[in-house]
Image (cartoon, rainbow, N blue to C red):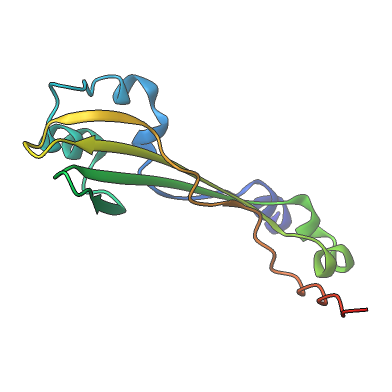
Length: 126
């Protein structure tokens, strides 16, 4: 039973709202404000950057971590990746006045597979 729970379990963190197209569609460039975005996304972003021209970009993240079936096989578990990790990002860029200028999927900040097994030996120079 525990093994089945480990296989089916999934951990998620971040702003799930960025994956909901109908919610994101409510944010309109040229109309929506920082307050509108914070309210719809459920809070402040994971990161903020500032441009030289007064623009401000908010980055929201949503990460899911899913165990792979290999976690149930002790020998394979030692040599294979045990988790699939996927991070999505979505950005909102605001004018100096705090109005949304652009929005869309953000840069791929992380899309990797976690490896809780032993690290591979680095290749030695020949």
